[in-house]
Length: 142
Image (cartoon, rainbow, N blue to C red; front, top):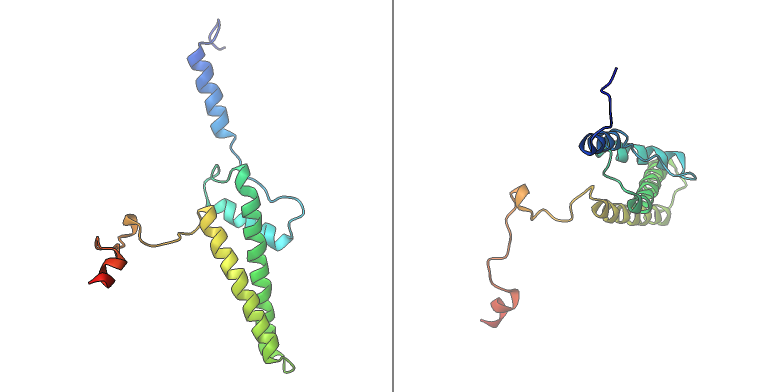
C-alpha cells in the first residue's frame, strides 16, 4: 500500500516529468514516403538521440531522405551503364550531372539538419583559423 493523503506538488512534478522523459519516442517516417526513403529516415532518426528531431525539422529530414534515395538510384543506373554496350557518353554525362545535383542537395540538407558540419574551422576539431588578424584587402594595399 502507498502512503496515505495528498501528494505534494514536488512529488507530482517529479512524477509528471519522469513520465514525459520516459515517453519520448522517435518519429516514424511520414506516410507517402517511398520505402527506400523511409529506410533512410529510420536510419537517420535512430542514429541521433530520441528527442533530436522536432516537428519543424520533419520536412527537411523528409527532403534529405528523398535525395538520399534518389542518389542511390542514380548510382545503380551508373553501374548499369558500365555494363550496357548501347550507352552513350551523353547518357553517362547526364547521370553524372544528376548525381552531382543530388549530392549537393544532400550535403546542404545534412548541414541544416546538424548531421554534418559546414566547415572544419571549429576549435573542437583542432582546426586553425587562416585569418591572422589582417584583412585580405590590407595585403593588396601594400
